[in-house]
Image (cartoon, rainbow, N blue to C red):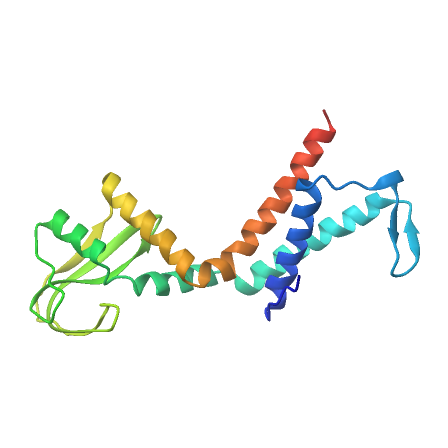
Length: 205
């Protein structure tokens, strides 16, 4: 099966992690405490050395991936989630919590300016404005705001608030690229390390 990825750091980490996952979770073992590589016609009698090299390579790839892509998921996810600020569920939640009408047209009134995560909590930013221009997703592109116009933040709280925030965040991850491109490699690396720890724990029993 071909694994195509133009990003070398992500490709190296993903492939190495998958190899570890397959080995540990599928019950891989070295027979007779030796490893044979037919490609170079050599047999290695000290597989522990190969294990150390493999683990070193995994942690090196984790380090390189973190070094090159640190912060990219947060930045890109914020942009993707912001594009969803025109969704009906956010507008209905704001209307219910504030007791105000949030029109979807250009009419003067309360409008959602942004929806995103801030310090571990989902927050909705609202403004009082007019002459609203929206894109095809309902997100505000431009507006007119008067001196002294109201604006503020509304945190998603309670069961309903957290449910909407988590559900829409999960949907945004699944339907956009940031999650698969920047977070999944870390998840695969974590599974590889967990597999190694479980194998070590089972071997010591």
